[in-house]
Length: 260
View 1 (cartoon, rainbow, N blue to C red):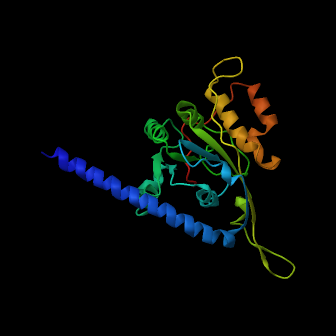
View 2: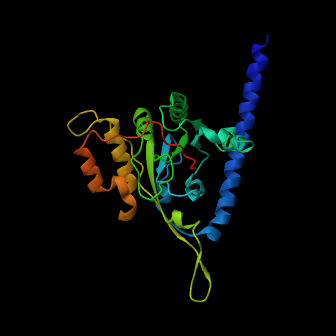
View 3: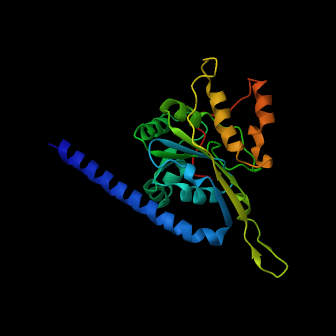
């Protein structure tokens, strides 16, 4: 007799969460667009490349807390974020990020629960946001990534959207002024590349491994970045790494969307 009340309560709880999730997405979208001109001088290229339907993985380089702010402005619909588990233990913040679509991941190790949750979302046609590096780059260059994002894309066939941020690292620095004493806004360039799906085999029909797929995924981001940001995924570094296949990579699920 207790089964039906429990099912009704779970259904009601999910409905409340979904309404709040949709409402917070709309609210944040308007707030962020109002704030953006005051934060930086932003140039966006390729906004039309973000698919509005179907399973999508938005992948981006990560240099600043502001990356979360700007990537929300690129989302045409509410999405989901892989977020480090520590946030969910913080009073109020844990509930807020959950309403915004975040779900926890244990960084630095294989998190089967987070991986399965992300797979389920994509199989239901949802939009997922991942910063494959897993944390902010301290030198602002692309870092060698775990293979989690490539695994999700290859297993689900989701469209992958490469996004490149350049300049977000300057927003929180000490402000600069022109000759007349006017505060200069930081310049931010955001490039959104063409969506693609990861191949499972090469031209000879051989199955690609996750390291190769991760290199391909990150090279799509690197192509959109100025050379000084490309780091581990510059053409030269990718070629050097392929000649040394023993290169160690981080754990497979090391990449939350929310920075620290």
